[in-house]
Length: 88
Image (tube, rainbow, N blue to C red; front, side, top):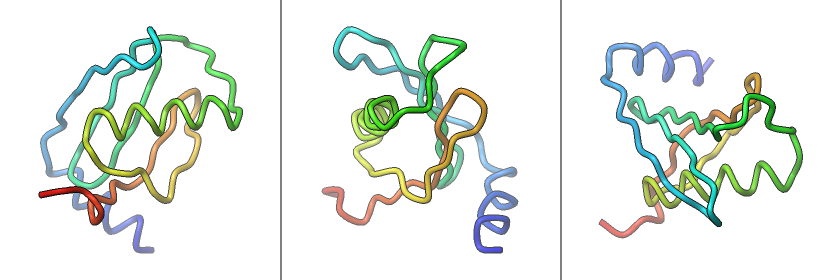
């Protein structure tokens, strides 16, 4: 229920796109309110722990925040930004 409320509130918020490069690979990080989605250029990203770690690193590099409550959606990772441990 909490996630539904957050997602509904995010629908009225503008989307901010970031592009970051990690180990020579480019990732696109979309931030809308507290929700975040991260994509690589591959249309067929394998859902593996290693891929998840790379996508999480891209979120951290782009926003300075951690991704929490993450889940795979098609070939990208989505979740909620947690900036509580980020320097202000």
